[in-house]
Image 1: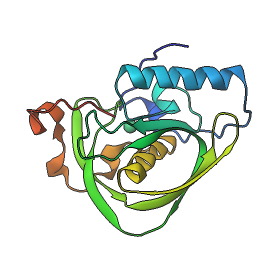
Image 2 (image 1 turned 135 degrees about the vertical axis):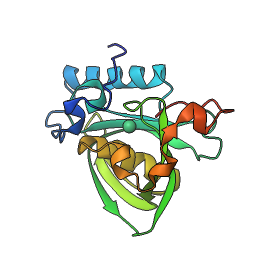
Image 3 (image 1 turned 90 degrees about the vertical axis):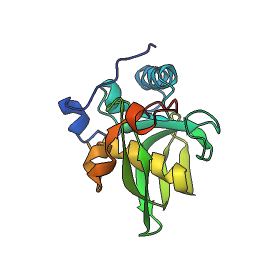
Length: 177
Ligand code: NI
């Protein structure tokens, strides 16, 4: 296990559709998840998708403690989510700031659905089934987009909000997710 370099926007692999995980409990999957956790922790990230460290598989991890870079953001439990399926529970969308470890140093307002259900499995193949809203729903949409080859700049509607984090938020320490 190791801290891996995070691929940045422009890398073709980030635009691929990731493959489903077929085998659980393998050393390869265990190593991938440990690498993802170490890499995310080393960068204080809120989430990471396997393609971001060069593995085109449907694995995402996310979690936010109620402190850190999002003073307003609610806590999101640390989750390992494999082969996710999202079901929208509303058509309502709202805009909020997003960043991405693959688009370092930048932020923009991104519209996301406010409520959804996500299903999938954890690293042992045990089912996960949650209905969430707000910031939790936003993080899930952002991470699962990575599995479809979509980066948040492709979701921006108001490009006047797109800018450098240190310019947009000069007095805050905000780290990319
Ligand atoms: Ni991202």
